[in-house]
Image (tube, rainbow, N blue to C red; front, side, top):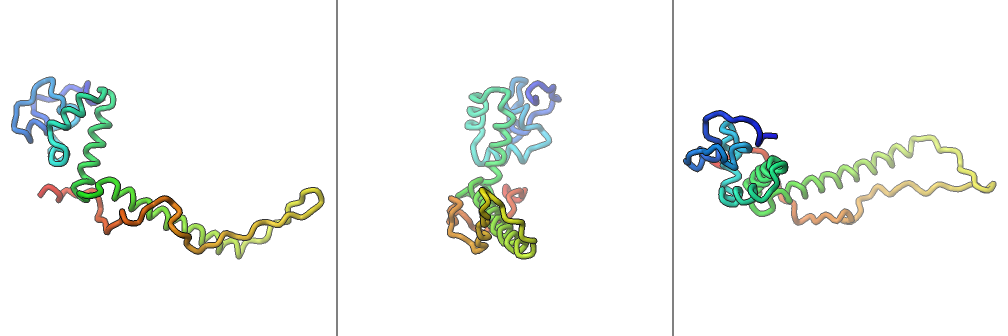
Length: 163
């Protein structure tokens, strides 16, 4: 775990950013190393150092690294898309998944045209007919996904956001 690692005498990225002396019991030090100044800068810009400190003090120590990674991801997403944040990225991925499922259905329908017909299944000496192939036409929005969340998105990981 990062919290148990020994650290060098240099200040953590948070203390450097906040221009204060880094103490041995600094809550930020295990999670914002001195070689990752942009990580803390983004988290601080979105959430504020005081709020991050409160969040970290309330989270059990074994879960703090995951909490910091989540805060860093959400901060990056909020800087890219201030309105929707991570939800915008999730919505974009959901839309892509629906499109790919549609493409897969069409491909399966095309393959079914060329596949040999399987022998009929027998049940009590009667032939059972198989259901017709799935209609490859796009259905209405049945995925529970709301299209209004989608806007033209740029890649989410860019370091130009703080400039």
